[in-house]
Length: 339
Image (cartoon, rainbow, N blue to C red; front, top):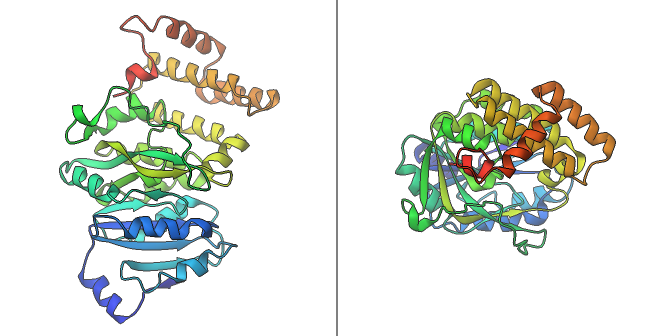
């Protein structure tokens, strides 16, 4: 169900093009929707439209969404009659509706500080070559209480040492040195991207995934331009048992998809044999030590890595030796390689 509000909204839709299109994809997050919407409506940067999408929720999400039908910031409401089966189909649909220069996929269970848009848009406007900008995140639980974990791990990077609290990097180099090792862009809500760098095919492979599809998308769109890191925790990333992030870890599905993403980078970028060996050795180490999977599941995962990526236990031993020698300047680790 695609709905414009009324005649006055329709006139504004055709005449006034917003700078930012904010897509709010929702599925059974009624309990968080009001918090999310207030965090958007209270942004210090106000030149935006909101596109509300519901993927056939079974809770009272639609009732909450209807409260915002006549809000002048809301340009589209789309309620699916059937579940799409993929959050990335919803992303794709929302981007088709979007008119803004920039896209913010603001997940319905997350929140943001009031200056999130102001600071990301400032950095993007100052860097026309940038396809993506992202901030840090505070992790919160279902009740909004902080976890107190630092996922960003910026180490020596700080606002005092950067251009107004942010830095831009060449996108292809960022993929090889950063995103190959780890999805530093770990939450869509922390990210703004420039629409001109987007094309629908960038999400085609992601639609087939449940967990690592966002990682693959950020790799593809980052490689089209530059990427900006904004060194402030302006996003509130909610971790709870029903979140896609947690569900993927619990099921083990994230591992199979991680392998596909790493293979994509190796096939499309020059990562080099040394970096590949260290990256995969690191991944094998984490997998072997994980207590979330049964020995049989781990064995199947190890076989999948060996088959798909062509590496075995020798790579794991190489990574261990490399880490022991990490004090030597030319040895490669994730921390040393990170731009």
